[in-house]
Image (cartoon, rainbow, N blue to C red; front, side, top):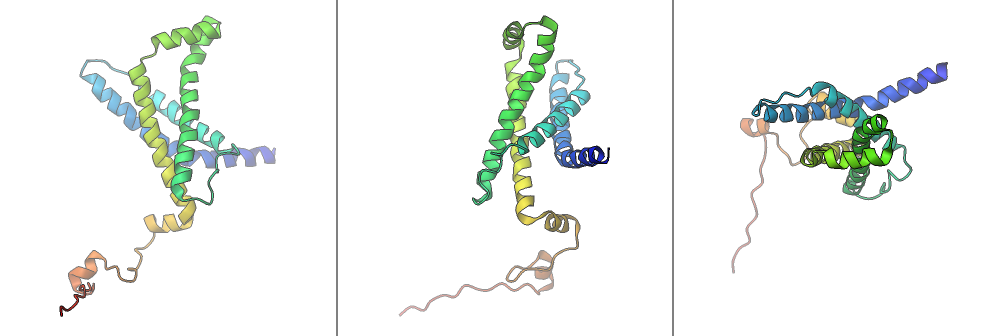
Length: 194
């Protein structure tokens, strides 16, 4: 029983950061959609859908993280891992998003082929691709932030965001230093003619 509780707590701890990130992102998308549809006097219940979608994508990210190919470029610049992970997450989320619509139809119709044909005919493709584009942007931002945190270190990132202000680095003056006259700017050296 203790092993199960430890596993459950570890899973909850791992899902919290992506869940919060995607909850905020999906609720922004839902609010945008709701505001656009209000012009046509259409009202949509979006909070529950955005929450479920965010939790699904957070779980997809965690499942994709367990794949052996996810850290394919550990010794390359961060851009490689960001692009690779974004691609993997987007493909996984695309499959889950499609299945999210397909499975209820399959249960209702009892035939996978019929359900797939009906879904392909009934799905609102502009809306589907708009959601996918938002998802690509959100996943890219998530991957970029996550790789930066991995490279810098969680403690340093926490210190940077929530810790005391750091001292100025060599050769870089803060704005307040310039105002007090303590920041030094070097003048370019000009060569003499002749």
